[in-house]
Image 1 (tube, rainbow, N blue to C red):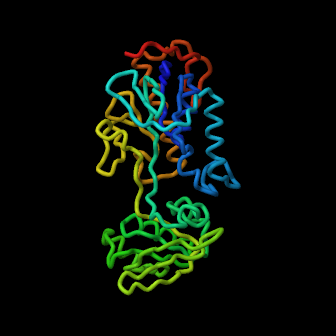
Image 2 (tube, helix red, strand yellow):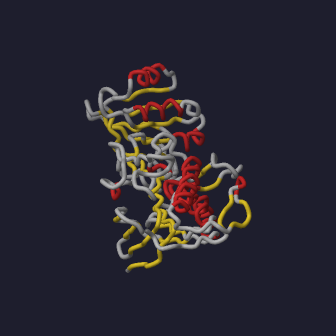
Length: 336
């Protein structure tokens, strides 16, 4: 099925970046489409308590926060499609995007597909996510004050997570399946010298133990094959993230891992295609920073569309946020 509507902006992704971009774009009277994906809401959908997003002094459940994001975008008129984009053509405008059974056209695109934490694939790992199993120490470390925590990994990310968690935990167990870690020497030194961190080498994780919450990690010593349950209340997987960018390979500029590389502000190497959120941010990976990037990408897309004469901003109404004028009506013109 083909939708002949040419949207001013199509947003691929429905996490904090995608929804915020939709709010700004739709509020600017751009004809806005959000291709949410089948598992929409981003990583916050598997996050229980969110206590560090501004405006919620008592905290909020991750899925509830995403519902509010979506409702706000809908309020301004953004169209939502709960389908996953499987293929794109950015070689000419209007850009073309395909899901399993539909085609969509857009004068500009914001890619906000995010990144997914790499998991170990343990039997109980998925069922205990949000109940002790986490992929983000910055997000969830606060909930483990004065508790014992395990961190899995051997790179700089794992070292950073372990060190960060010492602010809250009574003890941090760093688990690694090899007899040495690959982290930088300075990070290794900091971890080895920290009194709250114990390193377990040659340790494979067979499973996470617990019914309603994490109670222990089952370790298998790779030298002796001995199995023991290490009592912990938190289990942090720090083996990296994988950006969700495979369909853009060979089309959009990205680094060796797959994170997209904007060339000017949020603009990608393809004029009219913008990036936002964890899809290009491998440093912060926070809901609030992703939302900020969604805002930037929407503003960049609007300004770019003006230069292409795709939207008519000759008539304005009230000043928008920070006094920026926003169009009274965005009149679509045939895409060049």
